[in-house]
Amino acid sequence: MSICCGNPTFADDISLLALTPWHLQKLVDIVFRYCSKQWNVSINVEKSSVTVFTKSRSQPSVNIMYGDRTIKQTDSFVHLGIFYSYNLKNSDKINQRLQKAKNAVITLSTRR
Image (tube, rainbow, N blue to C red; front, side):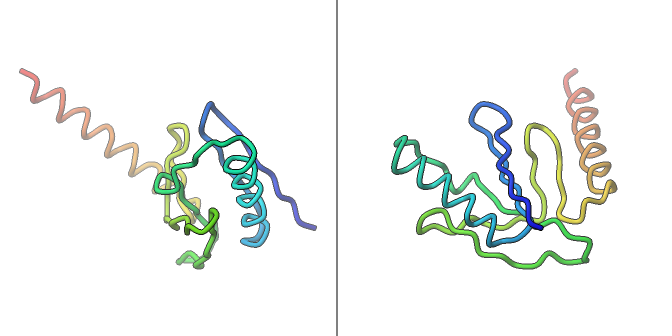
């Protein structure tokens, strides 16, 4: 059984979720077809990324194309203010929040 779902979330942000790279490519092809051909809307591919969620220590490499351009693959990303990591470990989220807190303390302490 395979489930593919596009998940439009907020204004101009969108997340596409799929169980396989093939299904993700099909979803990206649909977005490309409608945005570039039908609605004349441009997508900034440089601000787009692909992350493969896995329990492995390393992320498998995938090649997802938006038209003739490759979407870069990343280990983690922030979507609507929420941090996601390819291995879904909470330690990454905690470290990211701690870094934000440290930066805030440094900013506050230098404002005298």
